[in-house]
Length: 401
Figure 1 (tube, rainbow, N blue to C red):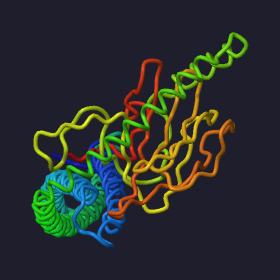
Figure 2: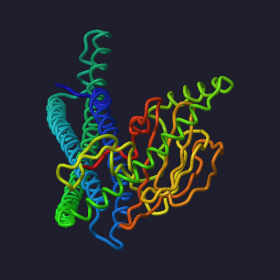
Figure 3: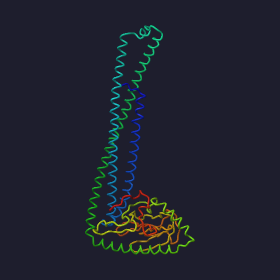
Figure 4: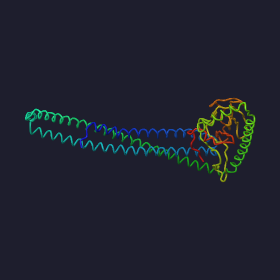
């Protein structure tokens, strides 16, 4: 089958180019996914390092380790996806290269046959004699046209060979680059797997140490639950009083704020710029104490030391409370909804103050285990609701056990 330059160009546009663009798009998507995971790992590494400054065994450190393990596992999965995608691309590119190689072989064989035929014909008769042997003018014209087309066909065949050779060389170079990328990814996966094994060994060591300190942990937990209960009672009392004070004069404004807040479900910004959910909302098992179930009225976000806490929605400060074990709490009203920011060491707002979204409330408290952790709650019309359903996805999708 004769393949000319135009056919090869169309073949390249219809087959090679779309696959190249698809592969590039998938590659960029996987790179973005990996970059997001790496950013999260860097954040939690700083938080994990903070917990080792004085004590190496605490529930906060275990939660940071758990989050690192989750993130590292996600990174390894992302690398594996990159390797798989690259393997598929290499196979596709290799099949294209093989097809090009076969085309090039066929083109060369056809060209050799044309050259041989020309030489054989030239040896048998003179082209001038061939032309003037025509019996009619029309026959002469047809013979001239045939000779011209035959010469053009040889030129096109030679050009087609050069085009395919060039594309084939580019394809081979691309495959070699992909193989180097594949090698680099496999080395990266090995490095990350080694880091993951070290983290799991550290996790087992911390768990074993905490289990030996069960009595002390139970005492700390009892004190924590008592302080949380006191804080919940104070917040409930403030909310009840605020709702009792509500009058028809400001009911329209309350309804507007309530409606505006509800429209932002799943889109509220995070109250801190970095960190991870160290304790999720609702009932869940304690990370080390067997047969102990916790019931969290909000979420705990472990973050960096001295992290600034910011409002997630416009509203009014309706309460500032200070309780041993819970630090300072700022309660804000947003119509029929309320947000509470606890475990602050200092605040920069005052009661009754109206604040726009993103306003700095204060800084996170760092406890005796060097854990900096914010407790964030959202109250609806019938009590607390899950803040994870209201905050933007992205900063901390993975919740360690």
